[in-house]
Image (cartoon, one colour):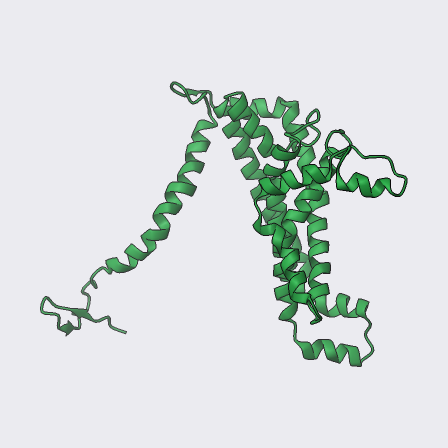
Length: 305
């Protein structure tokens, strides 16, 4: 179809065959509202961080080029491996916890009953609160002497658990707070997916004698597979970037037992003032998240097929 342009008098004209149509700057203008901030605040910092990661720089003075020395140092840094080991443990606790509890809560409120609207609000509410507030609340809940959790288990004769002050329990304590905070998004996504499942299909399976377990296994879960894949992927990325809860609740302690890669990067950059080394750690974490996300998406796609 031949494009139509306007001449200087405002009259519409058909360009001669082979003539290049006039450039529509309005389209570029609308795209620029997104493209320019994205380039300035997303792409440019990544490129600058990649450059800084190959320098020795304390933000004061000129960066000194050291090549891949920071990356080599990261491989020999035992605290890097401690942080990555911890984040793997975080992922093993938080990702299944959020996914399973989100599905359970979504199934619970998917049926209409009194106060179901209130239940939906309560399940989603923690997700709209900042991680700092969540961390402070859970510091009081998990306090060794006066925390609600220890008061409750004390009623059953169980001794107080040092949730945030023990190398064995600190990571679990932070994970509990993270699950409670992240649960809302998974709950909403899974609830929306449940409501898209045809009612006729569920009712037909009930008429055919399918019990709750068979309906869940053969009807509900297959329909939820794309959303479950998205929830797991988002939660894995979120867990690999965990910081605020760690910083507020334990500050990475005791003895690094609850540290995470982002928290260690913060310590290296802000506390030790080694911005070059911290940038190398950040780029390494970015690559790890990218690779894990690609592998996970591939595995889920293969399982689906």
